[in-house]
Length: 373
Image 1 (tube, rainbow, N blue to C red):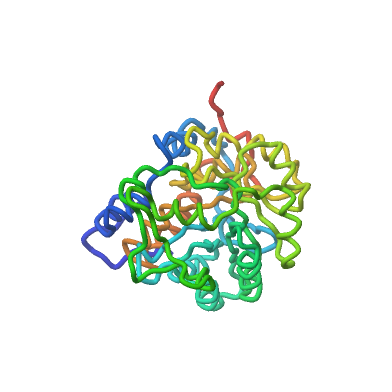
Image 2 (image 1 turned 60 degrees about the horizontal axis):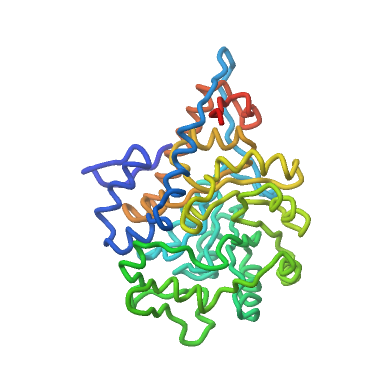
């Protein structure tokens, strides 16, 4: 059943309407932080354009009277092939922040990846979503210069019942997000980095004319991390390692060689290297390169159920969705996030029926007409 916000003035019927409505609920600094990309935002825009370039070739006269959207990732069941991407500072959108998002995800049977830079703690999010014992909950990690801090974060996630570590590898330094720089982005005094409270006195300070987030990355994250560090990271817990931020087939092969159990094809939502390839355009090469050895997920640009359909047809096992979750959170908290998920579920269900696919296993590359190079 579709869940809608209890607001009779305007009930969004798609994710684009949620984005429009969210602008009425967010201050300009927060809106720019959530929505911006790096430099000229070419990659940000291309993530969407890539889905528009790919067309569908539907099958007809197929029995689609009973459709099944369920799948599994790393052995955990999902009601549809969707995870919520790791996103920082969700309490800027709503007081319940990551807790509301986690509850919406768990109740809908989709996955959630909690950001290192969350405004609710590892334990708070775990306690909330533990009401749904089968929920898929991963922890996103950056390797910090302080190895003791990295170790502590991994140990906390493992103890709290997270099922995998999702290592972001495309941010050795922070991309230049000019809207954040112009706004001198910083957290308000009442919010903090909940998972980094073990660093005494840590806050996001910043220089005049600079983003506080940029200062944090420069001070805390380690640009010297290499493939060899993955062995150390995996020694800290038995949690499977997911590598997020791969855009090349050869890097995907190396990730498998170094022990990754899944790969997320991602350009960080266009927020790191502007001019980088769209995630969807990188997907087929990476799926071919890993040759079924690990599961491949796609992140970036998903706004419709047919976008999910296209990603699955190119070989993704599931997709991650980011910004639209924040729009739903800003508009109506947990109910808004639930509605965003249900809209995508309804659209994927309809898209499958109209494409002649009764189950996810029926989705294959023959459904697509790819753009000519």
